[in-house]
Image (tube, rainbow, N blue to C red):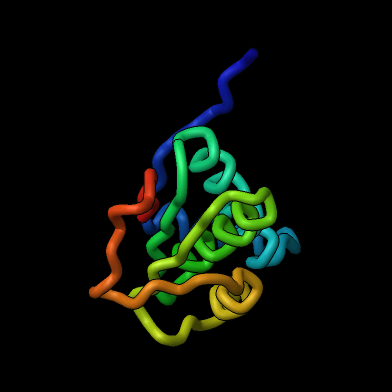
Length: 118
C-alpha cells in the first residue's frame, strides 16, 4: 500500500492555500471537513481507548470539532476540551455539529483518555 503524501505548511502558506481553494470555489467548510476527517482517521489508528481533542476558537479548533464529530459517529469515546466558550466563523458551526461532552478548561482531568490531540 502506498503511503499518502504528507508535508508541513507554515501559517503564511496555509493562508495562500486557503485563499486559492476559496478562489476555486472550494468552501472553507469543505476544507475543514476534509482536515477534520483525516485527523479523526489518524487519531482512531493511534488511540487504544478514549480520545480528547483540544480545540481553540479558530479554524484549527474547527478541524478538531469536526474530528470529534467523526470519531463519535464511529462509536469512539471522544471528548472535546475547549479553550473558549464561543467559536467564530466556520468553526462555530463545526462546534455545534460536534455536540457531545465538553470538558472545562483548565480543570479537566485527562487521565482516562488514551490519546490527547492538540
